[in-house]
Amino acid sequence: MEIGIENLVAFARQLGLAVAGAAALWAFVFLVCSRTCRSDTSQIIFHWIAGRLQWLMYGGIVLGTTSWLALSLFYEVFAHEGITLYPTAYEVMAAFPITAPGYLVLLVLSLVGLTVRWHSPRVFHRYALGYFLAQFLVLLSITSFSSAWSGEVSAEKAFFVLHSVHSIFTLGTVLVLDFLFLSAKSSRTLQQHIFPLFPWISAVIWIGLGIDFLSVALVFDDAVMLTSRFFFSQTVVGILIINGILLSGPITRKILSSLEHGFESIGKRWLLFADIAGTVSITSWSAITFIDFFPEVPLSYVQLIGIYLTVIAVLFVGHNLWERYDTAEPRLEGRV
Image (cartoon, rainbow, N blue to C red; front, side, top):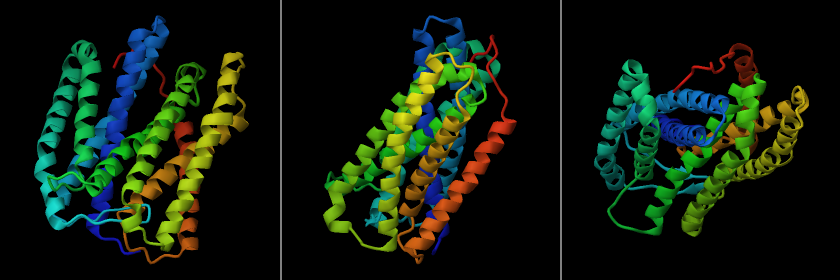
């Protein structure tokens, strides 16, 4: 595979924005949950979850912002699931001044948020709901115009916008979902509060997939290229759909049923199934997003599938290491 530094930087920017946007969105949702529930324990747990997600958001912001700055030095290429579509050099460069104010606002919000949280946690807690919503809206705006801009409305421009935006609701939300699953896996109390929300989070991922398909429909006839890259991407999309049906269907129902009936613990077999399904989901969305930025892939279909399966195995091992060493749980006095 021919890998240019500009391709890697473009992928890193997309990954950072997707993770930051999703983390901000779900931190906001969990804070809403904390303010609408009556149980003190639930309030503390939802605040604790939002607190963990904010560090995921800041990490994504750092990655996305530094990659955006570095990308200004390179010419960006862009493609989608075997659908090859290139913005012109003018369109790529035109996107930088459009998004620059957004990145500035993003950095200011982040610095202010970190400073207030450090010096006055109570003040941060008071305005946290609006803070995360503002971060999400800024990230959504930046992501919408991060790829190309020409000042005119067309199917091609809509493709670039929708393709970029869907990453927040797919790749970013999948990573948040996996982060939450790993955070709650070793704690019965966390499972009781976090796992019931998984169907709603999965629904957002399905919406993101719908946005993805809509973007493809806008340009498919003009830009399709039947290569090993295209067939690999379509295979991964198929795996995503099947995996998503299993994860949001029988696996989630079994886990929630166990929690509702007060079992001492969820069967290890079902947690293993959920772990594998989550790993497949992360790898699949990462693979699709990654290969988007590499229009020329000199690897065969079999080689691409082999790399894909290897990454799944490596991430699964990483999941087990996480579970072994991450023992953090909310304290009764915990706050965002």
